[in-house]
Length: 219
Image (cartoon, rainbow, N blue to C red):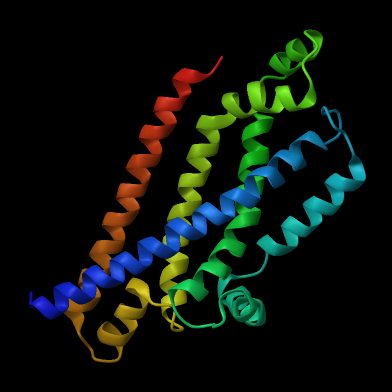
């Protein structure tokens, strides 16, 4: 492998990691509270509000139903407004984040639904506030499930980042298109695939270890 090829692969891998990590972070910052809101406003829960739940649920379902490629094109004006351009790694983070937010919200909601309702009832009986129930009971108990779900989301974003690269987003997808496809460089294509596999395996390994670790902190 030449030094030029190695440099290109390292640069593209760094861009992919940058897009995926930052996109996942932003999506979690927004998706986590949305998921909590979905759960607590469901019928029979601590902040029951059917109207709020229906509106949030509908918006999330609509967003989830939009394919990433279409979403990426549809939000170009918004992307330009946020980062000043629609091309490059920074621009790709916007649609990556937007695509992950509804999935994370549903992951959080489903993880919270798995929490034993008896724990919530016990907290209410002891006079815990809604905030205390969320932060001291619901989130700690659902954390392993959330981590497993977030791991799957991050892995999905690795694939989405490759699609973003196909339209000028940078990263391994862009490298595979420019060299593996347009220049018929099979070796470059194979190397990008191998790196993507390694990234996915690494993310899954880290996610499994974190889920196992935090499962020990459950009540």
